[in-house]
Length: 201
Image (cartoon, rainbow, N blue to C red; front, top):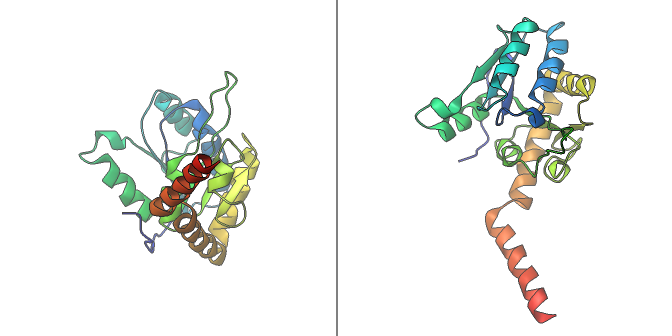
């Protein structure tokens, strides 16, 4: 289902696929995108998902005058939400998920969407947070920044937009990384071997 798809976009498309909650850091990505958009209008940000933080997201987009460049899509309302995610992963150039730990301690585990995007040869921009550094290898399959680092997110966005060879190299590495380390059959074999070691001990 998750395949390498060559994009031919007129604009560079960044994609967020996440539940609309504060800890996903969607507002940080919007602020970072706004910084880049001040000097480049050949970019677009698509935010896909749904959740309680949607009103705040739309308010921020309007406040920053980004309604022409940022689209919010509630994929859950579509006939086939998963197919819509696959379609937009194929269309985008890179995926962004800038999760952070909230003041009340809410955080991620290991977001599956990062594996899915990399399976499609899409570099990811994410954060040094929870299990994310195991999935996105900084500088090899994408980029990681500190939590809430808006300038850092914007800098990594700019790098991908301005360096096509870097984009392609990271994308190829990303797909290879997921195929080797997150292949279902291989993961099952590893788990079986762990059980065997425990039993034998």
